[in-house]
Amino acid sequence: MSTAAPMAWRIARRYLRPKSENGFLSFIAVVGVAGVALGVAVLLVVLGVMNGFESELKDRILAVASHATITSIEGPIADWQSLAVAAQREPGVLAVAPYVEERALVAHGRAVNGVLVRGIDPAAERLVSTLDRAVRGATLEVLTSGAYRVLLGKSLAADLGVKAGDLVVIAAPHGVATPAGVVPRLRRFRVAGTIDSGLYEFDHNVALIARADGARLFRTGSGVTGLRLRLDDPFSAPRVVRRVAVDLGGGFYISDWTREHANFFRSIATTKSIMFVLLLLVMAVAAFNIVATLTMLVREKRSDIAILRTMGVTPRTLMATFVLQGSVIGVVGTGFGLLLGILVATNLSTLIHGVEGLLRTTLIDPRVYLLDELVAQVTWGDVVRVCGTSVLLSILSTLPPAASAARTQPAEALRHD
Image: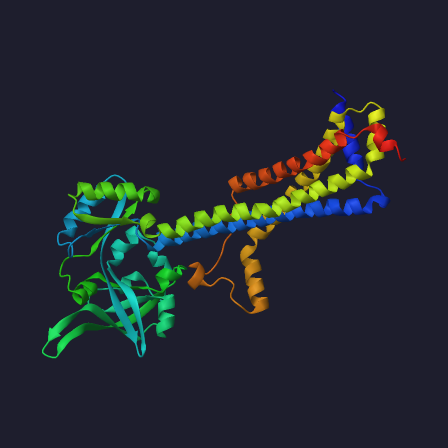
């Protein structure tokens, strides 16, 4: 028993380095390695893209969206100052910022877009988000009371055809009754800059103005639409905001970033699981290549196997020989696939930009994918799962031909030799 494993390895190593007359077997062995490598690489890159997409989307959402919000069920919150002080004393809450928000129309010339107009206090906004890093051509401080300046999302500004210094008209949803009928409340705002968050949904639908200007436009008086909360742990937002609302006396509508964007992350998780199962078929094809390779090798080496049996080599040793051969093909293919997958994932953005330049097209449309760039992040968990599955499939694929070799009868195999 102690010499069985070394003998099996010596025979397997000899068969893995075939002579010139066995060139076809050598070729299909290389095809088997290539198939395993391709399956592993594709699976790693796809899972890496899904991981990167989820991480980038999460980071960019948290950069521009509040971790949690508390709004009044009926009308503006009048005593928001005391509520903000009380909320900031709650465990887990780092900062609180008031805001005024309403859907409205923004127009420039013949171009009109529906947008979410948000009135903010620049100093307080810096405490609850990193939105100031996304502002181009200005800073949040330009949004002062009475200046009537606006910061438009980059995509929104492009659709309207405006740049810094241009005037736009914002129409509030609630009109003013006059003898001539209901007239919408209109106000001219000067574009002070743009917002480039990298999140298309935000950059195409949001306009920022000063909170005081928003209060005058939407007639909220001294009240605010709600409070934005920044938490020490964004992933605890559902639990923390619920507790804060209860401690403030209840009667509020609460929301958080996980609820507002839940469909995005749920679809990513579902897609990731489906892609893993589908791409396993690529690795299954590679496993069938290993089965074919070893089956043909067993048929060609029937006389060699018979001679080994007559020399006292046990069926277990013969079976181990072919299991080792298939395992080596699987491990080598998995290793090459791992290197190729990491190489492609690391340089994915460069490859995408190169293909876009070569084909003169856009592969990553932010209107579809929400982001303007894809970044792949290969995790150790995915590496272990993919490589482990690949090696396991490779080993399992060796069992039928290895069992066939072990069942070879010397007399039958040598009858026609």
